[in-house]
Amino acid sequence: MAKRRILVVEDDRAILQGIHDALEYAGYDVLEAKDGKEGTRMALRFDYDLLLLYLFS
Image 1: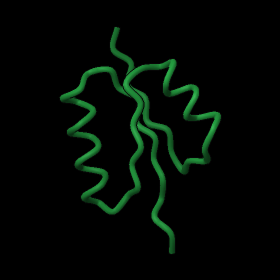
Image 2: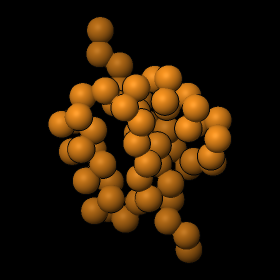
Image 3: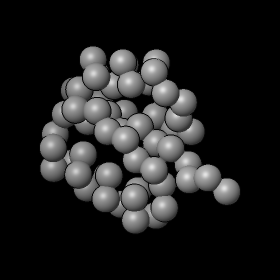
Image 4: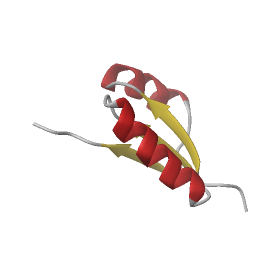
């Protein structure tokens, strides 16, 4: 079975790295975007099993 692909969109580098490391350790293929604009481009360009966004207001 192919690895599940997840796109993580997060502008805080430390949070992004922690999420990335945890998901990769769990066996997922993780791609990351540093902001919403980049995340939108990547989401429209590739297929993902899950898009993970964090919004803090």
